[in-house]
Length: 404
Image (cartoon, rainbow, N blue to C red):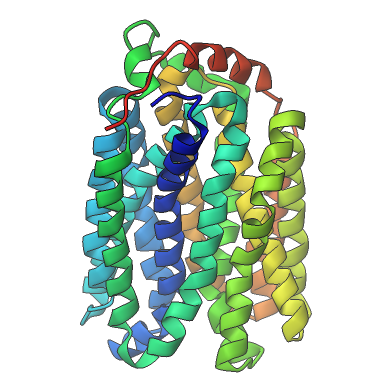
């Protein structure tokens, strides 16, 4: 693929971002459908958090493996492998007949996600370094679409909850077909491995270390929010089914609207301002959403704010890390980022679940609001790395990529 072929490059960017749509679609389908599944298999409500934790455990264990496959084997093979695992166990999640079975299916779903999300993000960020903010914004845009669409797919089928998961599995199979047909056989990192030293010392860069630390509380707060906000809207705020669906879907609206403008700006002025802005939004939304028991309109706005924080923080954190390391360890650096993110995420559901027995305001303030302050503080000492991105761009121009 010639980089100057803008149409082909845009198509490739959308296809590369498609797995993020799948991941978020599946996550939102499960988040909104979990109460029904748990009820159908006669498991306690605690399993909402436990299955979410199982999902992220699968991601934690295999994220570095996905990064290794990206750097040393083949991005194409890795993404197709991840999509295959995801398709099978996302679909099976809707057919679970017992609590243990459901936990196992969600763990294996997470394994598939761990592989393709690392490779997809790394590929988008490395394909054209000087515009990585814009390219990564495509993943947030499609990811936001998945978050928005998920609840509306689940809502009509609460009586047949297996159907939305079947749809997720079929969409995963579609992704496999798209990647087989369109993903280039060669990627620049595969060429650069011949001349670039595969040095783990690059992972000691300030931004890699601080980013990997800052994203731990970010992951904890995020999964605390998404694991229990559907239940909170339905049972505590007593929204109607339609209102709850709309308020949950608001999480995906803000990143869908703002991702590309923010991506363009981050390529010009840097990533750090948007990382801090996103974390600040999550602090505000996390406190207000659970402490003041907002009416429907305000709950919609606050959940949209939290969704903005998710999308803008994540895409800029990935970008600033890739700005800071050579392309020979791009996959491993993003694998490290996803690993620590999901270590935090593994504790989000159980932390929120254990605290709601005290009160929802205390649970939200501690698990989401205060934890998001920690995310903000750790990110403060990070440095911009756009200079290396410009250097990487010169190297990209020397490499011809060949379409499959």
